Length: 68
Image (cartoon, rainbow, N blue to C red; front, side):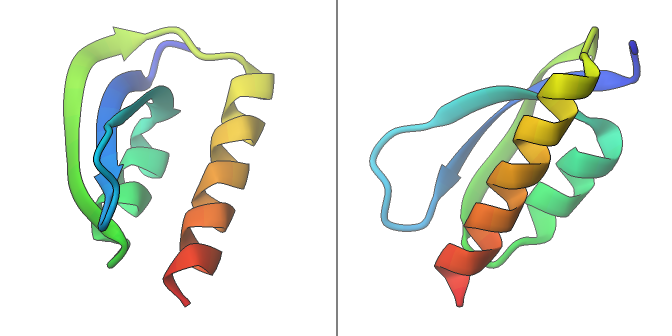
């Protein structure tokens, strides 16, 4: 799948950035989470596998849980 982007994000209170490859929909969801301090695209049109999509979905769930 080529409809993905490489992003870097930082959670509020974290010192380091995390980088990952996400679908564009996942990117939009990451950006609007209140726990996210910074979220920016580093590279466009990146390939992503089904397993990677599932891993990122889990990170989204974890970020939501951390925010509550």
